[in-house]
Length: 338
Image 1 (tube, rainbow, N blue to C red):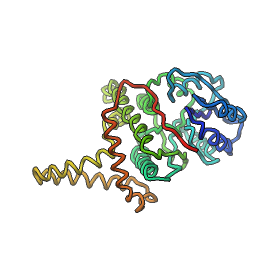
Image 2 (cartoon, rainbow, N blue to C red):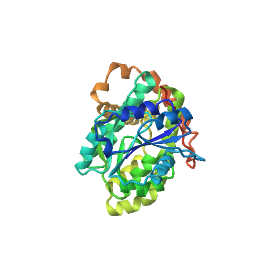
Image 3 (cartoon, helix red, strand yellow):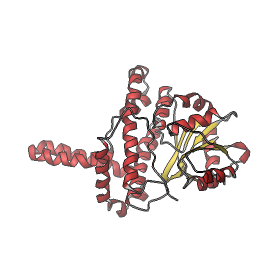
Image 4 (cartoon, rainbow, N blue to C red):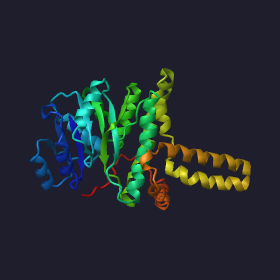
């Protein structure tokens, strides 16, 4: 079963579904469902003409979690796995075929390689690079040392029965973090499959970037508060994956670190040069680590020439610090374009 939650996604959803229906995997072996939330009649009519299931719920407060919960509650058939894709996601025709092969190897929980499908301006290019850094550190590297991959919100595959039993527990606007925490609590391994690509549209304007990062920063704090009560039990059980995931929620965003560490280093150098040396060493170590994490094909002069845009976006993130509301469960939507 493949789910496409779609909130105000009239610009992209029809083309995404048409593209997905070109899968080489046998049509009788999967179903596609779109959860149409606040989309127009013309979009819904176009979707109804396609061989899919169209859900049209009416939510008092919309969220991706509520869309997924609705779809599962309306599903009467039994499936082996459920795949979640965003409305703007595009995949290769052999996506399900290759994903099925991974599941047949015994991996019931899989995070595919989500990557940028657009790099048309500085913001989109930097956003795509940032995601690849996350793929290297929190997914690929974790699997290499025997730990679970992080989830990323789309391109995710779950064993259907597990997902059906747990999706109703989702409470926040960062459902991927909640699902990951539930999996970590049960010590379930998440496989990262770097060879199965899911192309995702990156934000391309500063307002969308700011709103996206506000959602992520709020979700990070909410996840930390959600995960902390189970942490003592994780230590007792030696649940390294859960401990690691909880500690990840304490990490300061990379862009803020890159902007603030050199400032602190300059101040410390003026106060006491020995202290300053340590901060400069920390800054250099961070730069080296990020350079290693960036895939070779992205280490281009063009990326490193976007330094001005980087600091402008970092300023947006710093502004978000005053707007974080840890009690908010509101879904902050980022719009897409045709």
